[in-house]
Image (cartoon, rainbow, N blue to C red; front, side, top):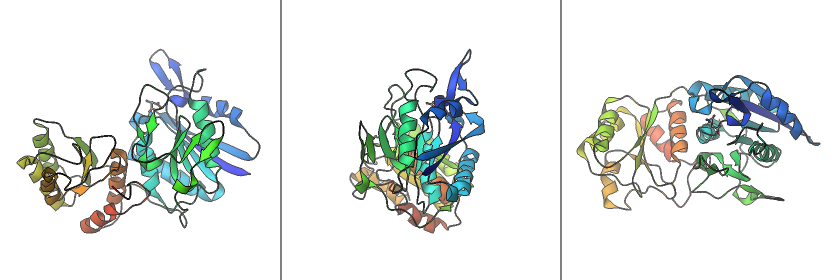
Length: 332
Ligand code: ASP
C-alpha cells in the first residue's frame, strides 16, 4: 500500500471563476480529488490555509514546503506538491536542491485549466503525479505535466497557451504517460542516503536579462552597487556578452564582495560555454561562473541554497560547480 501525502499550495488547478477572474476556492480541490481514489494507495491531501496564485511565491512559502516535507518524510512513501504553474519550475528546483539525500519521489504538478472545468488538464496531471509518487524506486523531485515526467531542476514553463506547459529543453523526460506508462528508469537518479533538508535564509538572488543598448551598463551598475548573494546574467548565444566596461566592472565588484555571478544563455536550448567565442572570456576573467546548460530557475534556486549555507565565497564557488541533482548535462 503506497502512502502518499499531497500538499496543495494553490494555483489554477483548484481555482474557480469569480467576477474578478479565477481565484482560489478553498476546499474544492481536496473534495474533487476523492475521485482519484484507487486500491493499493492512500492519498492524504493537506490544503494550505493561504492558497496562493504561485506568482506570489516567496522564500517563506518554500520554507514551509521544505519543513512540511521534512516533518512528514518518515510517514509516507511519496509526495505530491500541487502548485500554480507560473513559478512551478522555481519551486521544483528549490525542492530538488533543498531536499538533499532524498530517497523518495516528490512530484510537483498543477494545471492550465481548473479541475472544475470539463476540459481541465488537471485530472491527467494529478493522476500521473500520484502514479509517479507511488514508484518505490523514484528518488528525485520531478514535474508531472501533460503526460510527461520531467526532472524538476530541468523543467521550465515554456507555454502559457497549450496544455504542454512544461518542457525540459536540455534533458529527456523521465517517463511518458501514454496508454501504458513508459518509465525511463535508466535516466533516474540513484536514491540518496537519507534526507538532509536545508531551509532558505536568503532571498537576495536576482536574474538580469541582457539586451543590446543601455542594459549592459544598467546591469553592471546594479551588480556593482547592490549587495546580492547571487546573480544570474542571461547573456546571448553560448554565453556571450559585450566587453562593456561597466558590465565587467560590476561583475568584478560583485565577485570581490562574495556575490556569485552566473553566466547563462537566454537561448532556451543549449549551453553557455566560456571560450566557445572569444567575447565570453572577459566575463570569465571578471569572475563570472559558467552555468552551462542549467535552467535560469535552477540557477536561481541553487544560488539561494548556496546563500543559505555557511560557506566561504570560494567554497560557494566550488560547490556551485558540483552536480547536486542532475541540473547540468555531463557534456555541457
Ligand atoms: N497564475 C497561476 C499560478 O501560477 C497559473 C497556473 O496555476 O496555471 O498560480
